[in-house]
Each structure stands twice: as structure tokens, then as C-alpha cells.
Amino acid sequence: MGKVFAFFEAKENELKKVSREVAYVADQLGDEIIGLMINASDSVVSAASQLGASRVVNLTLPEGCLYSSEAIVSALVRLADEEKPDYIVFGQTPIGRDISARLASVLGVGYLNDVINLRKEDGSFVFEKPLYAGKIIGVFSFSSPAPSVLTVRPNIFPVKQTEDRGARIDRAEIDTSLARAFVREILKKKEGMLDLKEADIVISGGRGLGEAKNFELLFDFAKSIGAAVGASRAVVDAGWIDHSHQVGQTGKTVNPSLYIACGISGAIQHLVGMRTSKCIVAVNNNPNAPIFKVADYGIVGDLFEVIPLLKEEILKLKSKA
Ligand SMILES: Cc1cc2nc3c(=O)[nH]c(=O)nc-3n(C[C@H](O)[C@H](O)[C@H](O)COP(=O)(O)OP(=O)(O)OC[C@H]3O[C@@H](n4cnc5c(N)ncnc54)[C@H](O)[C@@H]3O)c2cc1C
Image (cartoon, rainbow, N blue to C red):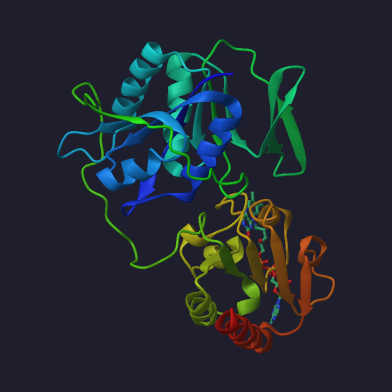
């Protein structure tokens, strides 16, 4: 067992759930974890230091620079040269994907993204990831020299339970002087929206909603039970909802505990983005809709009648819990 870098992310001063999953995977891969964070607050670094790491390095960007993959990667390369980790683990998030691929390329080492499982075979780790829109699962091992760089799909692995190994906390400034581009400002789109990829419940709508304004039904349902709203490409293409909500091959991949598909037929390009959800409920008025083949529970009916009833029943259950 060796050394593992675990890249932890935070949002709005809270450690992201995927960071705990990254910590879990790092713990499987090695016995010495070094947590890496970018511009994290003291409270987030403190939370990260409770994930079994022996050291947490908080890399800070100079004022005026909110993000620069180029500069961050240069800093990580230097840390990797010093510490010589065997693995570097990221979440399969926009930032994780951005940094990990560039880092593996600069280091000239093996890279595997979107890992959903790992195990030991003959003393070495093998990793599984979905291929061809989830139709098959590929089994991979690294043959390149260390470190091996990988990203793990969110909501698949268990979260690492709190474990205090007395992590040393270090802070190092990232040198951005050679960065050719960096982010100066981040403009928020909508307040209070749950992140589709991190939500525990996703309610998605498709062409069965009939028209754009009927998405209000789903937003209202989602708000009342703390869910995020997803969509099929058909309705995104029709301009009913923004592309940031699209689930599927050309949208986002989600793995919530509960995925409720409303008026979505279940085309393969949609399924690839949600079929690993833990429980799938489909509402469709066509009993032969392909979505029912992947659904754990299928409701054949008009979504305009079913959704209000579902909402009522879920709220009743929640009030009793
Ligand atoms: C390269 C490529 C990439 C793609 N990427 C994506 C992607 O990322 N994500 C994605 O979703 N699609 C993607 N698509 C499109 C995909 O093939 C489908 O066209 C799309 O998913 C269909 O969307 P839909 O299910 O909303 O619409 P439809 O297929 O039209 O289905 C609507 C469903 O609603 C049901 N319905 C109608 N009225 C009601 C009602 N009142 N109550 C209940 N049910 C009702 C119907 O029975 C039907 O099953 C991609 C296609 C291509 C070629």
C-alpha cells in the first residue's frame, strides 16, 4: 500500500459529498492520504482533515484569480514530484475532469476517468468504467509508472466516515505568473438551485410535459421534496429548459438515490445519463415506453394526474418521518 493524493472540492463553504467518496477510494488505494484543496476556507480544510489524511495541502490562488487549470496543474506537478504518490484521485466533476486530464498529460502517466468500481486482482488494482454509453463495462489496470490519475463517478462509492489521523495542514500559494488564461469572475445563473449531479433526488421531465410552462409542475414538486430538476434533450432542444438540466449522453450523468422520469420515453441517449440511479420511477402514459425496462417502479398514467398524487404521498411520508 502506498501514498495517494485525494483532491477535495467544496461549494459554498461546505465540503462536497464527492470529496468524501474520493477519500473513501483513496483509502482503498493506499495507506497514506494527502488531501489537496484549492482556495478552501479554514472550516472546509478542517472538515477535509477529518477524512483520514495525514496531510492536507490548501493551494491558494492570488487575489484576482479565481481559477486557472494551468497554474493549478503546475502546482500539483510540483507536489507530485516531491511526494511521489502512487495514485491521484479526483471526483468526476467539472473541475476534477478539467484538472485531472491535464495533470495526467503533463506528468505523462496513465489516466482513467469515470471509475465506478475497483478491486484487487493478483495483488494489483483493477478499475471498472462504463463504455459505449453504458452498454458495457470496461475493466482496466494501469501499466504506466506512478502516479496513476483517476476520477470517480459521484454517488457511486460510499462516503468516507470521519477519521482523524492528526492531519498536518499546509498552505501553499499557486504561482499564476505563467498561466496564459485564468478565471476572474464567476457569474451565478440561478439562486437556490440544487446541483443536478449531486442531488439525492432528481425529477426529470420530457416531451410528455407538453409545453415549457408545465415544467413549473416539476419545479414545484422538486422544491417541496428537496430534489433537482432534470430534462431530456428533446425539451432542451425545444427551448423549454436550459441545457444545464439535460441528463444523458450529451448532458449530465446523474446517480441519485431516486430518479423520477416524467413523460420521458427512455431513449438510450437518455438512459446512459441516469441508469445507475439507485431507484428509478417512471411515469408514462404509454405502457410500452422503453423507460419501463430500466425502471424499478413504473406508473402507467397521465403525468398531470400522477405527479400531484405522488407529491402528496411523498410529503405525507416525509411529515411522518
Ligand atoms: C447524438 C445524440 C445525443 C443525444 N443525447 C441525448 C441526451 O443527452 N439526453 C436525452 O434525453 N436525449 C438525447 N438524445 C435524444 C434522444 O434520442 C431522444 O430523442 C430524447 O431523449 C427523447 O426525449 P423525450 O423522452 O422527452 O421525448 P419523447 O421520445 O417524445 O417521449 C415523450 C414521452 O412522453 C410520454 N407522454 C406523453 N404525454 C404524456 C403524459 N401526459 N403523461 C405521461 N407520459 C406522457 C410519451 O408516451 C413518450 O414516451 C440524443 C440523441 C442523439 C442522436
